[in-house]
Length: 271
Image (cartoon, rainbow, N blue to C red; front, side):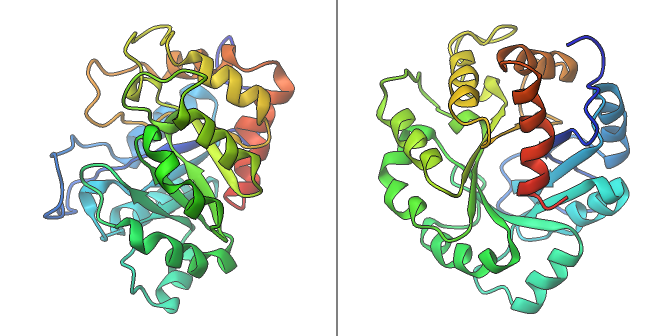
């Protein structure tokens, strides 16, 4: 890739927005630096992207106001992922849908506020809206939950290459479980944030680069790309252009790139 992406409708499928004036939840595990939607606009222009998915940060708990304001600020090219309590009303789900929300986030690592035992019922409630369960977990635990996840009636999107928190190899049980889920009819994977799993680190992330190559080749219709801007708690701060360039060169040709950057997100998030 040389310069911004030239694909119309290219989408960044995972960003967070933090704005002054929105209090952190008691469950927050860190105090984020300001990362307003206006600052993301500059990143978006630099990368040549026109669409974005604003994912509710763990730090705001069930208070989706900042995420909704960010979607409104970014306009027609934005959708969002909310965090809602298990007893959320149907009217509230419809209100969120009308505001651009297209899924519910389940963070199964520190800071998350929704438990495993709420996931299946939430999936059933959001399936008629065409929403997805956005799941973040240690990919090595996938075999423990695979049977339940495979039966979900809604779409399922797994974050950050599976976010394997210990070294992962092609013959690992976690990777096999991920592939079985992707073999099913309703699972997607974000080809994003290699720094969350890599021990080798930048710039090549050599120990997880094979995940992008393998998953995008085997499941070109089930991959999406994301920046994970503003890279919460990651130091040193990754360069967004280099992160996109890293993924770009691991994808096999423009047809696969267009599917992952444009077509798959358009279907998944209802653009």
